[in-house]
Length: 159
Image 1: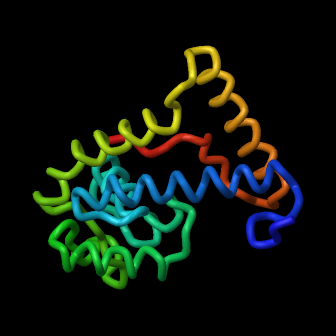
Image 2 (image 1 turned 90 degrees about the vertical axis):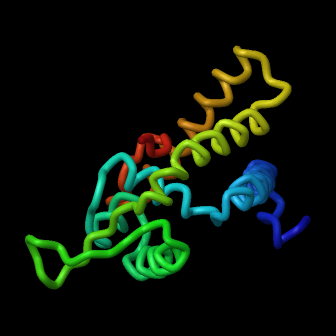
Image 3 (image 1 turned 45 degrees about the horizontal axis):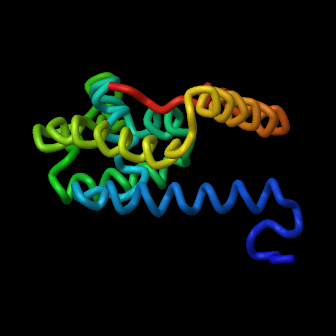
């Protein structure tokens, strides 16, 4: 039994192994274009939504405001996003993609496609469909145990 990897429950161990491998693969692919895991979601979300407040980004991405603030700071330093005052609320800050950030959207989508190809490698069409169904069902089951947890539908942002 390996307590560090989910105890003695096989489903937990397997899920943790998949999550770790997925994150490592994502980090390698995103690193090719100068991003870290999580930043690609911000690029895609801002690309789809346009300029929005830090608090709206946090709600959309289901993370805390300080997490977005830190991520935006790093991405701003890299020239990918810019902050500006919210015209509707002088206390709020709006975040938008710069031209450099906008130009990354295609590369991000390409990396996501490569990641999905790696994830589904060796599966036939029926196995892929079953895998997607089971992932969605697992996400739904886990969300059902959380009071007030948002239902993001198990999909990634597009844009």
